[in-house]
Image 1: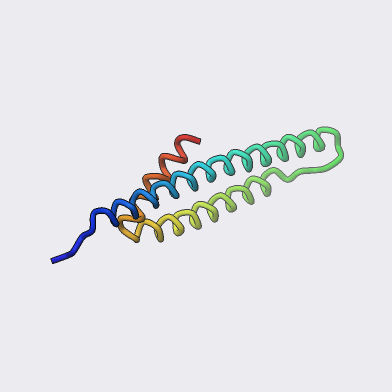
Image 2 (image 1 turned 90 degrees about the horizontal axis):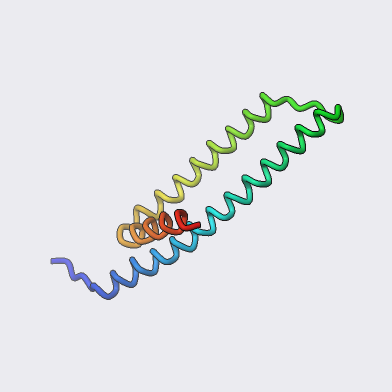
Length: 104
């Protein structure tokens, strides 16, 4: 028979849920800042190209951004999988992360 301490389990799930919420909230905020920076760079590139200052190979730039997105997504999935595999702590963390990411 498994001896289950409800208080300890509650602390683990609640604590990991709170940590997940904070990390999810921060992750979404950071993602928004990165999106603004990338957007500003693209606008700057287009402006400089229209003035004849630079020549942008848009096909290469788009391919690089797509590859970076795929790499980042794969790494994030590996990271989340590691936390999910830890049962109660993972469940609390993922729930908190999802809530924090949604609230940001």
